[in-house]
Each structure stands twice: as C-alpha cells, then as structure tokens.
Image 1 (cartoon, rainbow, N blue to C red):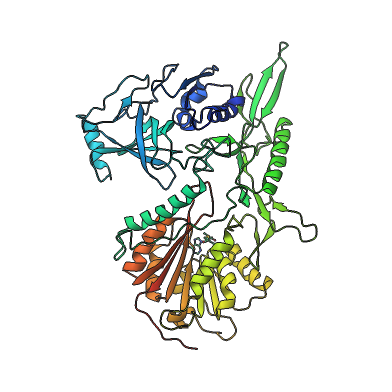
Image 2: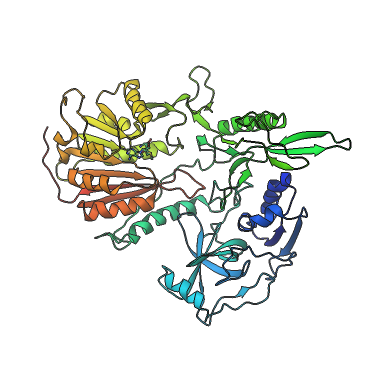
Length: 590
Ligand SMILES: C[S@@+](CC[C@H](N)C(=O)[O-])C[C@H]1O[C@@H](n2cnc3c(N)ncnc32)[C@H](O)[C@@H]1O
C-alpha cells in the first residue's frame, strides 16, 4: 500500500469489462493515490466504448516523465488552447473554489513560464503569441491578466502539484491531479477508499483543522468579494473560527444513494436457447465530476446504523436484480437484446433514503427510516421535531445543537442600549419549526413562515407536541409575511398582524435554501426594518450577496460571523451572520 511519502504515477487506460470498472477505479486510487476519475470523466466516451483491454502503468514519481502507454485520444470537443489534451503542468495551489477545487496560476506570456510537459513527457512551451490565449486572458477575471487559472481537485493551498489538463475553458483550464510534488503538512490519508472518486466528500485528504480553517477563510473571502460599504478589508470582516465537534466521521443522519436500472444481458447457448441475466452495476453516489455512479459499499461519514441498513438494502437490491425483480418496465415488458447488453426496459433506477431518527423509546435501539412518507422524530436539545422522512431536516445531530444555541443566543441578546432582549421572533424559511420552537421560551411571540405546506403543518404540530403555545406557523412564500401578513391567533395578540408589533423588539431569523433570499423579499425586509436579522445559510456566497444589500440598503451593521462545520470532509459550509439595525433603537414597550 502506498504512503504519502511514496509518489507513484499510475496511468490507467481503462476499457474494462463493465462489471469490474468500479473496483478497478478504487484499486487504482488506493494504490497510487492518484486521482483518475476526472480522467475518465473527460474521456468517458473512450472509457465506455473502447476494447476490453486494461493497461496499467506505474512509475516512480522521482522521474518527471511517465512510462505510459497507449496513445491518448483527444476528445472531439476538446479546445486545444492554451494547453494540449493531457498536457502535464506543475502548479502551486494558492486558493480553493467553493466546490473544493484548488486554483493554481500559470504565466502564459512571461519568459519564466513554469515547466510544462506534453502528454508523452517532452518539453512543451506555451505559445505566448497565440491570439486565442490573449482572448482567453482578456476574458479572465484574474487580477493579473498574464496568469491563466488551472483548477484541480483534491489539493491543499500551498501544495505544488503536477496536473494533467482535460479541459480548456474560456478563461481557465481544468485538470486532474497526477502527483503531489510538495505536500502540505495538512495532507492526511483519506479514511474512505473512494475519496477522490465519489462525489460526496471533497476534503478527506485534509486535516480537520485545515478544513475548518479553510471554511472560515472562505466565508471571509466571499464577504470581502462583495466590497460591502464599511467591510472592505479583512480586519473589518472578522469571522469566528469554524464551530464543529469531534464527530468528524459517522455523523450524517441522512443518506440518499442511487442506483440505475440493472443491465440486462442476453446470452445464447450453442443450441440457440437464450437466457437473460441482470446485473446491478452500482449502488452509490455520483462521481465528483460527472453524473455516473460509483459503487459505494459503505459511507464513512454516515452514522453506523445507517450504514448497517444501507448494506442490508444493497444486498436485497442485488438479489432482486439477479432474480429479474428490479427490472419491470412500466408496461410490464422487458427490453431484450440478443447477445447484447442493455438497461432493463423502462426502469430507471431510483434514489434510496436512509434517515436516522431518535432511538426507539422502548428498546433503545437505533431507528433508520427508509420510507419518504413515514413520520420520524429528531430531538434537538429538549425539543422534539416530528417530520416526514422525505422533508427537509438538518442532517448532523452532533453540530445541530451548536447551531441552534448560536441562533437563540444571537436572537436573544439585549438590544444595544436598551438592556432588554427582543420580544418577537419571525422565522422565515422555518421548515418544521427548528429555530422558532427552539427559541420560543425566550419570546412573547414567534411566527414562522415556510413555503412547503407539509413542513409548515409539521411546525404547527411540533408546537403542540412540545406544549409551546406562543408560536404560529404560516404556509406561504417568505414574502407573504410582509405582503399579505397573517392575522395573529396567539393569545394576547389576536387580530393583530406582525406589522403591528414593535419592529424595534423584533428579530427576523432567515434560513433560506442555498440560492439565498429573493430581491423582493429583501426589499420588503428592509422596509419592515426589524431590529435584528439572524441569517443562517448553507450558501455563504449568496449570503454574502444578500449581506451587501442588508448593510448598504437596509442600513444594518454586521455584528458577528460564525461558520459551522455541519458536514466535515465535504465542501459544505453553514454560516451564521448577525445584523443589527445601524441606529440603535431603544423604544421598548413592555
Ligand atoms: C435550509 S431549509 C431551513 C429549514 C429550517 N430553518 C431548519 O433548519 O430546519 C430552507 C427552508 O426554506 C423553505 N423555502 C424555500 N423557499 C422558500 C420561500 N420562498 N419561502 C419560504 N420558505 C421557503 C424550504 O422548504 C426549506 O424548508
């Protein structure tokens, strides 16, 4: 087994028997620590249609030339500028994208162009006078127009790596990682043998400290990019360290693997008799750079009870597939192809659901729900949330209490100068009531709004389940809280609308989907002008975009910025930004 210090180059020309291709990918990855899946993704046509010969070449990394092998076929759609297909280039990684890809920059027009080699290892000089290069550069967003961006996955900032180009875009190129020439001290051995192939995790090769430092830096970077008035410099955008727990594996309480319709193989014996066999190729997740599935026998970031049920389900699926039971088309007919292979007629596969609920109260055993319509309960701190397994609920029960605490603490802080915490809370995008119900005991009144009717109904039911009587939930798009506000039904507030409440005592919690808040919603929020906005987001970039409007148009200050590591080993970042109305407003009606 290769270690970090051993550098291998593994060149794989896979044209394998379909049934074994996933195992080969995993084997190559583990042995060489080389990242092949992009190579296959960008050359996937040849991967699927070429002959059934597997050729593997391994070379020591001390040599900069590879001992490869088969001639490499350039895909028809490959744009050949500024780099050749599979050209090898050494770059230093200076940043990461929000998708977790490393960014390196190559000087195209200066004499000190870094070493580049062609696919066969011979020296290759980048054509500095090429008009296409200039055009690409002119279109680039880079500060230094002479530098061309190359993006590559599975690297760490500061590392020097050898990459292999597989796509030239208008202003950057995409590449596979071939070899880590100078590893970061933050590089660690991934726990999962499919890290780098499976699209689920992006950062398993990074220490958890480095992952969290990067997430903190990323939140700051996206805010700085917005050039928000008063927050243009890094000393003004102070981001707290990313909050997380020690549970950095086995934490995910929801898993949604996929499978495709089994392959149908028709065989003909000597007498001309035909028989059909079915083969379920993969049950797992999409590869990181294409939509093809990688077979995932177990997922180390999911909880052990989920993995247990997942493995049982995988076995059952394979059995049912072999028996031809997974293959019925909607018409009941099966597509047959004499002596060939095809997807079983009509069937398209499916997405599975595994969701861990609270342990069974009587037996104490773990409960894993697999039916989207089944109701399940998750207790967060002392509040029980009952919801349909197919509906939205946060998926890391280890970090969730930290997030809830942070939202409640931010929402209940005394209003500056007034010495009193706010009295009213409006929870926009409230789901099944997580934040409103968790904060309810600190407020006179909470109103939640949620576009998913089932989730809004669950929130109302959850209020009853927890004997909370000061929360009201509305099924509508978030804007409706301003444009067609519901009449309040909470005792003591009957017949009022949220607009009748004192805005200076009001906190609005926002937790929109990744796309952030709509401009219409934000405009109405500014006009409504609550004392405080507590904005949780799973999309730091859209949150930063919205923050610009909240500060510049809404007239708020940023009070705190706190990232959460809700999904360790992955690119995902949860971020909490708290805003306070700029002019302190002290008017409190008790
Ligand atoms: C990130 S989830 C947060 C849910 C809840 N805060 C929680 O943590 O459980 C976003 C929620 O916003 C809801 N949503 C999406 N668009 C919406 C809209 N325009 N108005 C109100 N809710 C919306 C989704 O249905 C989803 O429940």
